[in-house]
Image (tube, rainbow over all chains, first blue to last red; front, top):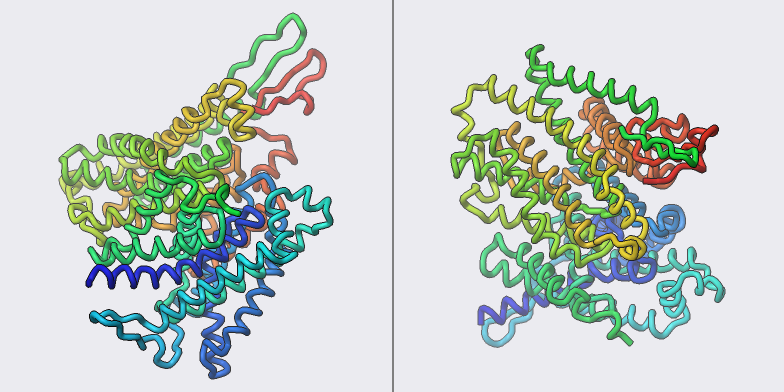
Length: 289
Length: 348
């Protein structure tokens, strides 16, 4: 029973990683930009939720829509003012610029909020769980996280495959110049993509902030988890990213079960093993519809 | 400093410049002055120079990969840390002389670059960059689990107690000076060599380079191993100076901004850039170290601005404004009568 429990906890943890990864996948999928500040955005979102929740006295769940809207606006403005100017043939420019943003966010948070750890309190749901036969228990919060990740994946699949905006996204991703000729304003389109990505990041922030005691410096490891989930999943579809998150979550949970020092390491090693054995990920792009 | 003799057609390919000869003389004087610093007996200054040279070496190696090779890694701290840990293994556990252990540690880092490359070179571009970071994190977590090296709390170089303090300080220092000269001179020489030409060809177009007969895989692996050697040597020397290593210090993310900022702000793809950037980094650090995190916020903003407004960096601005090349790597075509025209320059 111990192993079944470990796998279940891993799948639930994977839901959070999938939520981390979806935003990264949206931005990379549309404009081939790897946002190094992605993990720091997740951390920033948790602080924003904490701030608004503290100021209004409302539960983080209640203020979530506000955080999502703020983050979508932030994403739009960030793309139009900075990130659009980094796109091009040279990969170093977006890497250094988003790395710079990451350092700025981390250290601003450190300066403004101190290095003390914080967490979002949601009045008991954190610890509530459903008892299953055989002594297993599933926490309400991880279950809600997994369900949110699933819903976000379904939403993004629908958006990219069945809406005009999604078709424009895919057109710009496949061939920017031809998409321009067809009347797609790629720079505005990229800003929409980043806005959507940061909306998903705000969701990730909420669940991260409830689950973890967070500090300003956690962003780098969240970026790595998100990136590993995207690569493990492959670039075929958001389902691949979701699956990548689950695989990473299960790998970490198994590692933690063997030895507390091995959890994160086993996640990295599974990622590296996928690179060697299936370099295009579990759901490669060519296999996608 | 080779200039091909003029041919009957009345032109010559030149690589050196007058300023470069002056720079060489100044460089020799600076190195001589640095080498003589122990005579002043200021241990604090010597420690600062050792640290400066370690950072400069790491910056030069990163620049060699990214600026000349177009291979952007965020994981070079893997080799800094492996160099440091190899040093500890040789000195504490195998009883090797610590000063002999430094070059050995560099070689270990270079050798470990080969299996590492097998994994990370499956990724391209920005994916490669973050992949190398995940690898560096894996090395950190692996060593944090090795009880022989003290696990997460690390290990001190206890075997060094046997060596008198003055000997240790002076030998470490002079080794650092040699490393600094070797790193700057070595990258300069490599960039001007056949390998450097192949490297920049790959950076500009991998496909075109391959069709011109460049062995892309072998060239990239060679320079990746060379960069690992440099980072490993710098790491070994750094931790020989620090006397203590932990997984976080060895493979920690604090190395990353250092590579990025020193090279990007100084000027990518030039030998001068990392020198300028590293100097600037140390000056800023001395000046603003008591302003806490604001100083890193400033560095972050500065690197964003440099990348967006002047991607050639501070040295690039200087070089363009005054046409100043202290370490010229270009081949210039001098046609009889009109020397050094801009349109006669061939980029190396």
